[in-house]
Image (spheres, rainbow, N blue to C red):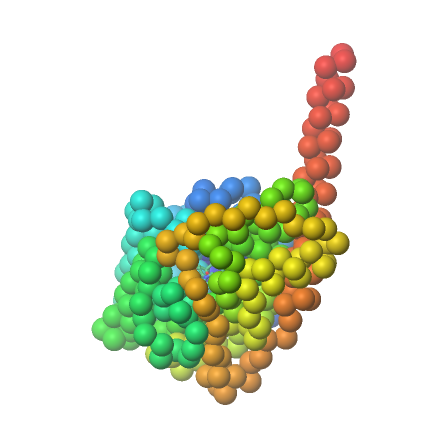
Length: 330
Ligand SMILES: NC(=O)c1ccc[n+]([C@@H]2O[C@H](COP(=O)([O-])OP(=O)(O)OC[C@H]3O[C@@H](n4cnc5c(N)ncnc54)[C@H](O)[C@@H]3O)[C@@H](O)[C@H]2O)c1
């Protein structure tokens, strides 16, 4: 099958593209490498993909690019491109609005006239559409409290309008806190691990008793693949089976690393969720999906990945320095 993945250079998008290729699909990835975090990280996420013969990559911005031709090529569209919830600040609203709503609108506009020949359009949404208490099944009230949640919900609703009016074969997936190798640098577990590796203080916002249902990246990808042919119109929560507070995560990471965390507490950030835990009964009943990777194992994997990244970065800066010294001596 021909699969178009937007946000292909991101944390989850790059894993999804790799899995689709492994499953024998042809994949086009689109990403603008928007610099809300270092584009070099996104470039690195693409490394393996760019070596694959059945993968093509376009550095395009969905907000401005004419997408009609590329969407005609696709059997499936996985729409992951978005500005994620990294800065809980209303002053960045333009970024959220343009990347999460306008970009979705442009993509839908391109799909509009051939929606019926598309097998599925998967809109990747988030637990943030539920708001402060995101614990339950897909019928929870939709009460987002952050610009990210509000604009991701607007994206969902735009897709639903296109499903109703133009027959878009829509499936909505709401992911809950995904972690693992390549996790975005702004996300909590990435920040905690980096601080421990560098012997820097860990910043904890609020009382640290916020609870998260965590989803390991391979479980998230497996669920996404299984829902590729879900009945149009369905919405699924995708989340792992374990919850933990911030303090519990830090204790686990101390255990993995054998290091003692230094903590710096700051006021909670407006828009932070208090409690998230996905009821995934529907996903289990329809697709027999269950999370496979427990929190301890998942954190160990992410720790090992970040440790390797740091070693690589240190080596390359040492090489740069020694090249510089060498140059200086001559
Ligand atoms: N990571 C999580 O825990 C999580 C949880 C819930 C939902 N999600 C959703 O999953 C998706 C992927 O998240 P992620 O964590 O991999 O984030 P990410 O930032 O790593 O990936 C998103 C990618 O989209 C690209 N992008 C943004 N705007 C674009 C535009 N206008 N044109 C082209 N490309 C654009 C970015 O450059 C980025 O590479 C997002 O839709 C996010 O809302 C993620």
